[in-house]
Every structure is written in structure tokens, then in C-alpha cells.
Image (cartoon, rainbow over all chains, first blue to last red):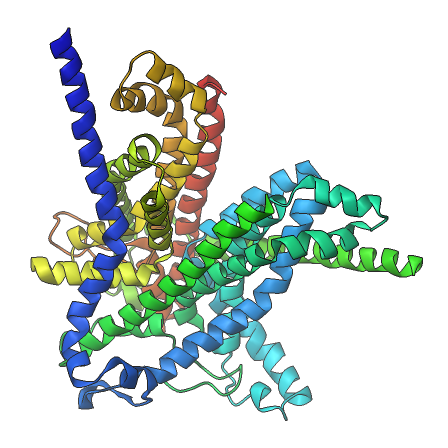
Length: 311
Length: 283
């Protein structure tokens, strides 16, 4: 009997060690990914430090010039435009789902949002090339250049429809689900008593939301937006299919752009045949990883505290 | 003042309903576009044949290579990431002490979840260089397993959170060890949820193109060995859309439809399975 007990305890303890080991591996996997990319990027970083890689605009792999600046600006332009387009409707939808929508409506909308989150990136890309790009080419570009063309940001030199705006629209739809679901969760965490207090003072529902719920939920809402940003920043296929991929700094929302993920995905074919090209692309992946890492960590810490303090 | 606040309420509510319509409308637009463009181009030969000579110029053939390739890739990657993910989640819930290290571990797993798939592809590629592998089925499986791993952990974590505390306490009170509690009580209770996690991870894996782009490569042949390149559906969509031939572009739409149907089936399957199987668990 005692022997049996010892065996059970031994099994328990060794299972704990194995599982603990695997957890440790999983928890340090991000660091391992970063180090592996760094090791491969090192030959390039030895010649050209990271700072000059990030700020140089010259991209000509055959002459050994790898400047990421146009790609970083391209990624930021597409991502920021996507956030600009996505944030207002996402917040309003989340508020509606959390505060107004009857339970039945919410239960039928949530699966739809899950489906939106599950649609593969290339399918978004197909939708972008079939719908978004033609609409921008045939309607948006001519109209905007007629009315707002004097503003540099809206100058329409690119008649193809493939560009920053198309990328921004497709990415905006792609980040809908994450921003909506996190925001809704944060809003729901605000205690009921505070709402009732505001309503008892004669506030309308919107006044109550504006003055009590949103003020309380603000850090969490910001975290949701940051999470959306970091998701959008690393998105590859859909963006690559609609932004035109020209290695230049976009000056207007209609200009083509080339994002960092698209740069990696488009050039994997020749990267082993040109010296240092593979190091440059893996350095680009490392930059991507670091940016996403920083944003995600900030968002997660803010979010954890927001939910704790709201409740 | 009184009229103003009610007017504001109505305007805001109107904007909210419009936003919800925009969100749901985008889903309808995407599915509608893929269906309207894909269905006319879809035919039996596309689903049952591999590309024949001149396929990319509009001649005979289909995408059976990509459909099979994707299914094999995802099945193997899911099987590979299932047990490590399960072990991590069980450890977090039953074995780990609640301290700052646990919080840090959870943060790290969350970060892992948001790593872009192109970075998994790049990392998979560096692993392959280390092992001396070329673009191959094995490389694709490794990259996809890495991509699915955090997805699986996150959904399984949510499933185990739903297991009532009392069940574990009862099991401990009966003298069961943590391992026995994990296997005989927690796993049994969580089984339907774990199946959902598997299906969701499959859905994420099968649709991902960026991670298999340079790890799995592409080929017109059916997958036979681990060390040869393998075709996949997302890349089939991407490459066919990139050709200048209109007939081939239409096949890209049909391929996108096939991919969308598989992903939707996985997600609806996960939902209905959860509902059906959860009848027998204790609430």
C-alpha cells in the first residue's frame, strides 16, 4: 500500500516536471524566435548597424544596400489608416453589443464576428482585389481627386486602385473582431452599481455610457486599440495583395505602399542567391517581431490592470 | 437641454446601429463576393484532379494537390502541437504555484499568440537551415505547428477555466494526486472544449499562407514524402490570382471558395460539437 502510494506520488511529481519543462519552453519560445532571427541577421548587422538599416531609404539588394525606411513608413501608413477607419465603428459596435443589444441579437452577432475573425487572410485579399480595389479605382479616386485633390495627402497620381487606402480598408475589416471583442469585454467589466447610480441621477443611457462607463473603461479600450494595431502591423498576405508593393515612401493615401511583411513574403525566392539578402529579410522579420512584442506587452499589462480596477 | 440629451441619445444609437450594420455587412460582402465569383468557376474537375500541363495557362486540371496538401499539413501540425499545448495548460491550471512567475508565463504566452504568422514562417525557415532541410512537407508542418501552438493554448486555457473549482477540490479530498485529478476529472470534464480548441486551431492553420510560404514551398504533385515540397490551398489562391490569365484567376476564386467553406465548416462544427457534447458535463 505504502509502496503504491509512493509510486503515485512519483508519477505525479515526474508528470509535473515534464509539464513544467514544456511550459518553460513555451514561455521562452518568443525569446528563442528573436535570438534565432538575430543570429541569422547578424552578418548584415555587422556591416550596417540596426539604426542605419531602419533609417536608410536605399533598397538595392544587388549592390548590398538594404534600407528599411520606405517599408517601415509603408507599414505604418497602412496600419494607421486601418486603425483610423476601424476604431470608431468598432467602439460603437462594442458599446451597442454591451449596453443596448437584446440578448438574442447579441447571441446571433457574436458568431458572425467570430466567423469574420476566422476568415483566412488570402480570402480577405481576394475580396480586396475583387471589391475594394475596383471601388477605389472607379469611384473613390476620381471623386476625391476632383474635390480634395489640392491637398497633398489626397493627391491621386496612382490610377490603379492598389495602394495605401485599399490596404487600410482591408486591414480595418480584419481587425474589427479583435477590437470589438476586447472592448466589449472591458465595458462589461464595469460594475452595474455605477451605471445605476448615473441612471438614477436622470442621465440618459448614452450620457451614462459617456460619463461613467467609457471613463472607467478607457485604459482597456486603449489596450484593445493597441492590440488591433499590433495585429494589423504584422498582417501579410491580404495587405500584400492590395497595396501595389512599390518600394517608395507613400505621399498620398492613393500611392502604392510596400509593407515589411510583404517585403519578406515577396522576396523569399531569391533570398538565398544574393549575398546578405537572407540576413536582410530575417532582420526585417526581427524588426516586425520586436514592434509587435512591445505593443502587445504594453496592451496586455494595461488590459490586465484595467479589468482588475474596473471590477 | 432636455430635448438635447434625448436627441443625442438617438443620434448615438443610430450611429451604433449603423456601425453594427457595417461590421456584419462586411462579413456578408466578403462571403458574398467569394461565393458569387467562386461558384461559377467551381467544377468537379477542380476538386478531383491535379494540375495538368499548361494548367496555369488555362488548360485542364484542378487543385486536388493543394486540397490534399493543406489537409495533410494541418492534420500533422495539429497532432504535433496538441499534446505540448495540453501539457502547458494542465500545468498552468493544476501544478503551477500562483506567483509572479505564473503571471509572466501567461504574458509570454499571450505575446506568442500575437506573433505574426510571417515571423513564424521566418523562424521555421531558420530552423530548417539549421537542420539542413529544404522547403518541404516537414518544414511546413513545423511552421504550422508553431503557429497553432499558442492558438491551442489560448482556447484550451479558456476551456479549463470553465471547469468548476469544486470538482478539483472533491478529487483532492478523495486523496487523488494532481495528475490523477488532471486525467480522470479535469480532462473528462473538458473533453468537448478541447475538441473545439483542436478544430479552431485547424481553422487557423489551414487558412494561413504566410507561414507555409517559404517552409512548405509549392508543387503540382500530390504529397508523398515528408522531404518534398507540398502545395497548400491559401498559396494556390495566391499564385493563381497572380497569373495574368483570366481563366486561372477564376480558379483562384473557386479555390478561395473551397478554402472558405472548409474554414466555415470547421468553425460551425466546433460550435455545434461544443453544444452537443457539453450536455454530459457537470455545470
